[in-house]
Length: 269
Ligand code: DGL
Image (cartoon, rainbow, N blue to C red; front, side, top):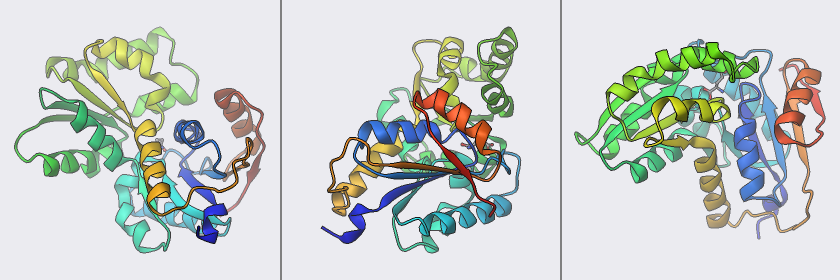
């Protein structure tokens, strides 16, 4: 058993959205310590350039590496799309991103080969999902992708269950209904938090792929393969939360989302 197995899993996201990945990780790996970093002062990443997002992500990874971690989970789709291979080249521990697991799950679900992808402007512009899907099944898929920037704002401002949100969802998702997709990749940390509205809008026959569930499965596989599971089987392994912005508002939102009181600390990078 390598000594590093006692270390934590580091998660990075632009804000609170990555807590959907945190939730899945603690569900599938209840004995692992986790250090979470939300770059709340600089979010949203969606409209930023790849170069800037890469720079921010590397700063966070450096911070996380000083917190005794054994692997990095890039929970943010935009940061994954902007440069996963770049982060891997800068780290000597495993780095996983959300795109590969989401693509694999979509391919496992689709029957018609008609797949939709929604994400931030950065994620869709990068074509990371579209390329990964096409490479896996060249010429066999019909892929339709669209950025849905207002979705992040709806979630952040607790406006998902409003008539305005309904209208925005109808508008963004109409092309997916027309294209008769059977699988829709939720390519953004925030979208699982509005999956009810998305499912109602696209119809019950469309399978929604939640990257959070898929990446947690990948993390588990890596820990198993590399014998990195925490040997200490305690019920409360320890979770730490750091943010670049206001720790109090993060603490409030995160405690509500996770249904447990958490503390968050501000770090200026
Ligand atoms: N975390 C981002 C993502 O998954 C969404 C929020 C943002 O734009 O920063 O793409």
